[in-house]
Image (cartoon, rainbow, N blue to C red; front, side):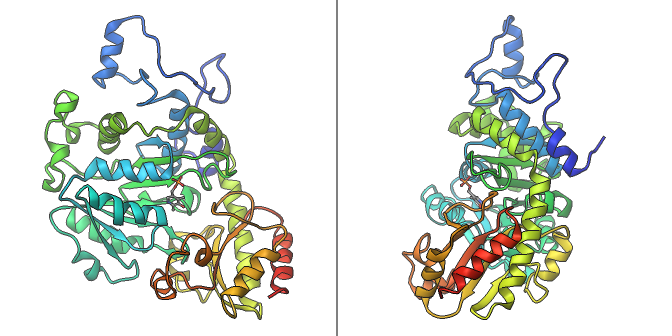
Length: 423
Ligand SMILES: *Cc1c(COP(=O)(O)O)cnc(C)c1O
């Protein structure tokens, strides 16, 4: 039976047998015991489910994988050591030298570096597009070597909302994988598989864990892409000699996830640690409640800032005059998340003055956990860029990024108000 998302948050991914612990124990073990040689042989042949070495799979990690897969409505998920290792494993599962990725330019800075700097050294090219560009322009970037279209549901720091229908149409027309980084929306606010995505990835270090306690990543297989006979995905249709001739496109389910785990997790070993899986599993119990509060708090904060005389502009899709408001009504009807950006009037020194005057809200590089925090990209994460380069990256010099937490909204607003008085 398919449960609702808030039920899956607390019940998903783990069902104890009689007498077992009610929540998943931390399986702090590299290896597993079997009495019969055949039992272990069946595991190696993927004929049976089970564990033999924690680099490939672990029961605590599996509990969290199960919860996220159920929340997203996917067929399988793979827990990774970080969000970045999830995007790296994702790329290597489909791309080799000579292949390319067609990616939105409005993506997380770390992913941008991976695609723009590191993967090209291995012969994998990325062609970036403006997510607001018309479909014809994006389509022009696709050729026979394109292995995926990569996007984010809510892109940071411009808080752009993805037009799923536009990308889903392109992906179907060209039979190319549609991948969505759903970190900042979470499956509570948006389920990309319902809008045509094929693979979803997460940095679970953000809202999923929610407490800034554990680093992690997740790759979720939608099980809704037809690899069989698709010339773009020869590696899914030819026998994998490194896995005794397995043809992934012939598997009954989870073809992408199986290739990703059997080849890439085996070779790169970037699995989530059992301890982090436990913390993230526990954190995700309250994901539905927290996303509701993050969204309603951010909506109130955005409305407050939009009316404030010292504020130049505010970006949050809850604002009726926001460029992405219409898309948010369609794809994020239950809330638009806790991330917002705004510009303070005056020169760049005003932003620094404001940041230093904050008392409750702290300065951090992290986002999307229970505690409100701010970052001034022009003087931190983007400080090597010139003023012109900042504008090009969609990060004006006066931009302040605010991750709205779940504190009482009156306290958050009062802190912003007193800090703005110093500007
Ligand atoms: C943080 C983040 C990542 C990277 O995740 P890590 O867990 O820090 O490696 C990827 N995508 C988005 C949208 C993020 O916010």
